[in-house]
Length: 227
Image 1 (spheres, rainbow, N blue to C red):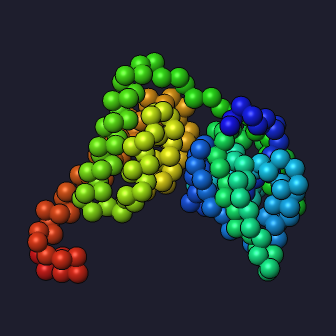
Image 2 (tube, rainbow, N blue to C red):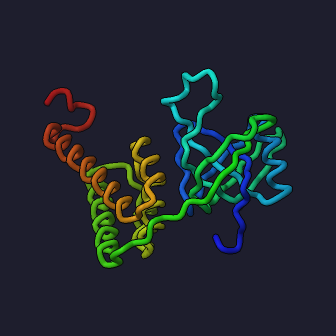
């Protein structure tokens, strides 16, 4: 799929808070702002491609930059779009490429950015990567058994993914609750390192869940303060 589509040097972009978009992920979006309605009309009439940039909250106080984005983002293609009678639209965007935002060209009538594609660092040891992927599968299943909100459908889907990069990107997009780590995983081009970082986070979350269970004892959630 990626080889059939050429990445433009300049793309329209949405800058969204609390969103980290990954290659291969499916992101549902509700388009209602006038600027993004216009963007969507233009995108559908051309390549159906645009970028989703995460809003860098640490730079929002800068008066010289509106909606400051993170430098690393993803570009996707619209796979489905349904327009409502009130002019809003619901669409499904599929991630294609990791990219670096080289320059913000304009914000009028909507944001357009110059980008360059980023290639992941190839895995040096396929066997080691496979072991890391299996360990992540085990940790995700354990987190689920400990009561975390992990959809069964997602865990079953991830078990069927052999490619380590696809696995960790989709797992991070769907299951990583830490917004800062999600962005860090997106920015980490070394796939092996990406797998290790996510595994470290899962172990930390599992330790927290086990501690919560020990503190709670046999009391139900609504009576945990009585323990």
